[in-house]
Image: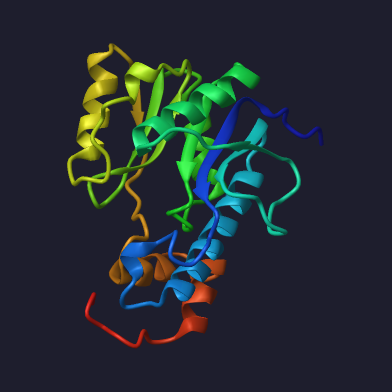
Length: 222
């Protein structure tokens, strides 16, 4: 049987180095900064594994920090640039597209329950739509795909708010783009999110890391 050719697209993962005190700060408390960093590292590894399972032309990690030994083969690493999240998202699209002018599906490292099949569906959607959008349960978004990146589609969208997702989707549609909508996923930002996501993906590295940490010393976020 002849294996299918890689899709003429690329997937970009936007992530930070999992350093205590730098990542998943909304998990502290109830977790320590070290525990939160362990969860972030596990989530990133799960995300990269899902991306590696998708047959695309190029896989990119837009990273804030030096990559570690966990980095899988087949990923191109580019540095993040910009200040706010809207700037960093826009720059990641721009930099990846400049190096390889193909449609881009971009995700973060906050949804370790994501699967290769979900990502493949997002890539496929860009064959017939201008954009693909994945809503998050907190009002944000976990995935954004664009056939032709444009800074005007992202810059100035207020980030990290319950209205971020609706504002981003409105920006896409007001720009005249046709948009495919992906299933809603939960970003891991708080204890409740971590428990829910681990239950949805019980065989994930994230679930194993959460189980290894055990019951947080404080349950104030539950």
